[in-house]
Length: 170
Image 1 (tube, rainbow, N blue to C red):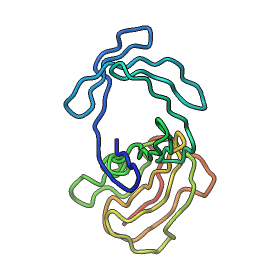
Image 2 (cartoon, rainbow, N blue to C red):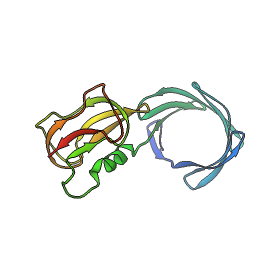
Image 3 (cartoon, rainbow, N blue to C red):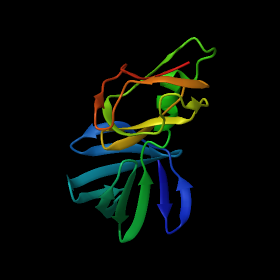
Image 4 (cartoon, rainbow, N blue to C red):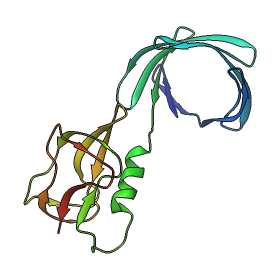
């Protein structure tokens, strides 16, 4: 995860190592292990003890890829799923070689928020074709190859399932 505290950016990699039960966890932040106990958690925030120190976090705003919170009176911006666009791009065929694949397919289910191209447009590999909203996150779906948009198979506000064709690019 990426954290921003008062215009200072620093990245932390965090994950749960062990679930000890009863809301107790061993977590790893970068290379250090810490003991975490969640006291309360609801839609307004979370109270927890990290390495025997009490903390209270209040949720301020949650957008598609950011969460604004205040922990111990310090505002923090958490960028969620910072590599999600790259994962979706890779799985839509963006990482394949050759130009054999005509159809750009959705690798996630979601609602079409916007379409950035039109039939007949020229696109380059990596250009944004559309934006999907899935699990309260907006994800850009990018062209898997250079070419011309032959057809668009989606419309704004429609929903797509995993594997649905978004556009055909020749």
